[in-house]
Image (cartoon, rainbow, N blue to C red; front, side, top):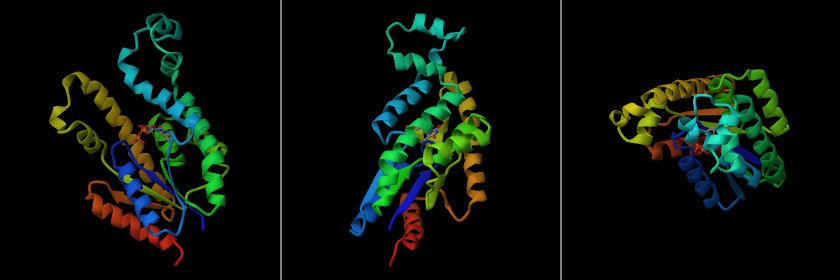
Length: 240
Ligand code: TYD
């Protein structure tokens, strides 16, 4: 029996914890081979692209006024090529990078495991791209849809679990108390909050459009309550 489950939600909502918990519970049954994966890092190519994409945020504060490639090259003699390239991560470049990583993951990992009737539990998948590159970065949703189709060959999850969390709550979790947010970062934080509000809105709209595929859970609930809710729903998909 093949089963494909994905976890979605904003940064810091607890996806990985819950995905791990689900994998543990499934494995305890000793009935299926369970394959946990993470996007975008589930293949070597994905890992490389993830490093590139993650670097983007780290280096935003270092962007010079005249942010051309040449100005950047001059100021960044000590940096590796991928580090320089990441400054050019335009929304479409980002879309394509995630699409490349996912294409490889679908071919190498997801399809073969589903063909072998395994249970695949993936943290992030196409809905991340729609929420982040579409709703967040503002790319045309029809473009994002095409990219997702290219990457997945139409392979869709049986169930997608959204851990829904308000972005300011997520930031507070990451940085301790809200009051600790440094003034220096305030502008950046407000920008980020706006972005993450759009991402959250995107997720909620996607869930509304396909309620039978999505399970939306309030991520402020306790970890145990969340994992029980997930298990209740997943159990219904497992054969008796
Ligand atoms: P990661 O450190 O793996 O974060 P998380 O633990 O929250 O998943 O970084 C993944 C980042 O990439 C995260 O901010 C979401 C973003 N992302 C996209 O923008 N589009 C995508 O298609 C995917 C898979 C991730």
